[in-house]
Image (spheres, rainbow, N blue to C red):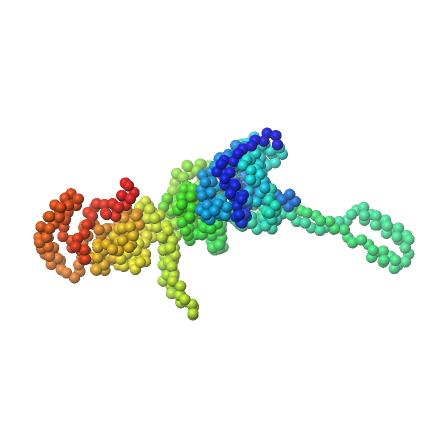
Length: 630
Ligand code: ADP
Ligand code: MG
């Protein structure tokens, strides 16, 4: 068309497109999920913007998605009445500006299989480049779009395999009142997508939790009888003529038999079938929602179809401020988190105010709970304020507090249920091997403990609750994880402090001479083998009003039940005098490198030990600080 401008895809985008279009990846269905998700995003955006600019809805007040196909021309169209794109937005959003996710997606493709061409393309949406999945199934992709601020409707188009795209004013005029229409010219081997059943199944699956209505244009062909007026007239005349000629009764019957069969004609009617009927899942009663539905919604929230939730909570908060919410705990730390591939800021909950999505990354949870995903929907929040003002609002503060409480309660229940399941004795069926049970919470905790420990440090008001979620190995836990509450239960009558030993691993702390007197006396010592443990203990100081105590410091008194106090004091005095020449000599030898040389009361097999001052840095802390080059 005249006035068409050509643009080169940005280099990284071009590279990614090459890989996507040449991929051997089999599951091409994902393109539909990505197009529906973009349409839904665009609808969320217009609804949000219309709060302050209601005139944006003037041209079209319906917010919907339409899917249409044309079997004859092998095209598939996804149309939305969302925000649309201006000319410049089309140029930048669909090709010339690389998104930070592009490179990361390429990395992830490589990482998943080792070869670029067979990687898992279905993750494309998580990296903010889902649009390009349209080329999995298309020879050419055409986007027409009309933004409310735009002077005209523009077209973007690019052929599969091309390093360029064109943008031009739509010669058809403004066929869209507002929004975007994406037309896919399907590849020869992808014609299956121009099919009602296929599209209906796929779109239903992918749009289950989309809050905007999604329609599929359906075709119904019926055979209808036609009474061809002229013909009928003609026959009537003929009959009349026959009547005149034929007098014989039998002959009359014969003529009737010869009468032509009734004429029929194929009539095709079109209809828009709505594919997603359910109201938003969080507004539905819990009893009616299956685990599978909850899991599916979680996949939508995480944009990751392989992510499973470990547990969730669905509640209605009622009181001065009402809201509905579902919160999820992931089963695993996403691989993309660990490798730093995921956008760092892709955390937060989806916040809806009166059905309007305000943000899908709204900060309602503190940093240490940022692994949780979910949705909060409240009618009590003001709509006509921007996100920043909203973040500061008192109502949000109240919601936040409640959400955190619910989140911690969910973890507490999860912990309890897992422990209870371990206690339950289910007899193995006859002839069946007893399978060793695993504590689900422990499995989960191994991955997420750093977050909880961070919470214990940072969230003072909830510290008590968070500390109860922590687990450690100890001298008496037989390699299992134990809780601080259990530790307290096991404390000796005389014991006033929570003893721990810190180091870089269970194996190394187990060898420590500091442990010997504790083991001998059956006093439990916690193993603080995670770098953050000792730091945390120093920060939180106590649990259940009992202070944490590093047994490698110099002021640990182990009460010896068997002996009487007097005897001990006298014996200590005696040794102190007897070894004075040695301690004096050692102090002189080490000089200012040691604070003090003294007679120990707690050595079993080792002749001497270097310990830390009670209030100084412990050896383990020194090690960590050196490692971090403070
Ligand atoms: P993401 O959706 O994660 O941003 P995509 O590659 O799917 O990444 O889309 C890229 C961008 O193109 C979107 O951020 C949006 O700006 C624009 N876009 C895509 N589809 C639409 C649409 N239907 N309506 C409006 N803008 C769209
Ligand atoms: Mg997208």
